[in-house]
Length: 97
Image (cartoon, rainbow, N blue to C red):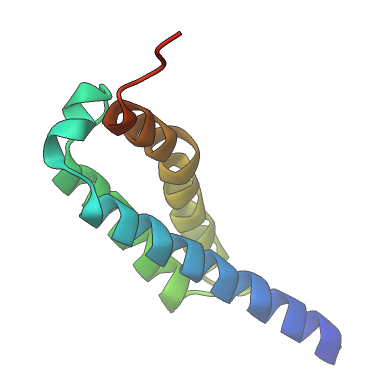
């Protein structure tokens, strides 16, 4: 029983750490890179990643607020998997083959 508690606790905090990373990354990017990557604006993504991080910090992976934790995780993962690579590509200048 104790091992299961520790595993769910690690999952909860790892999600919050990923959210914090996504929020800081969104904060440090240029505002024009978002429009160049054809994504929503910088304040929108900062709000999405900030709210997702807050949801994961306030609620736990396994508990009564699991739905909010999962919604926060999905929001952060959308940024990390979809928006972040496009921003990096745009700021590097794209592919020059």
